[in-house]
Image 1 (tube, rainbow, N blue to C red):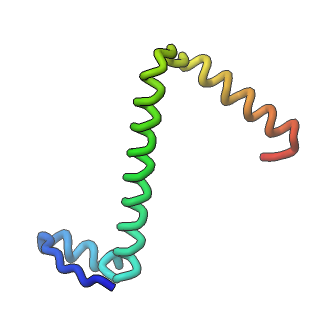
Image 2 (image 1 turned 90 degrees about the vertical axis):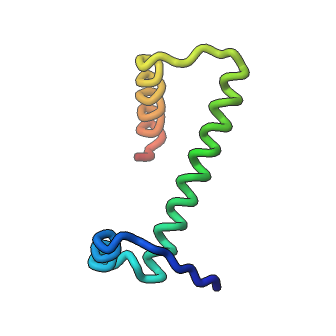
Length: 81
C-alpha cells in the first residue's frame, strides 16, 4: 500500500471532504475511473491514427445514423434490447 500526501486549496479540500471524496475508498475509485478514461482516450487516439493511415473517407452523420438505426433494428429482431 502506498501513502500519498497532496496539497489542495482550502476551499477545494473542504468541499471534497464535505462530499466524502477524501476517504481512501473514494480516492481509489476516483483515480481508477480517471485511469480507465485515460486508457480509453489513448486507445481511441491510437485507433484514430490507424484509421487515418488507411486513407478511408470518414462517414457522414447520415451514414452514422443509418448504421445505428440498422443495429438497433437488428437487436430488436433478435429479441435483445
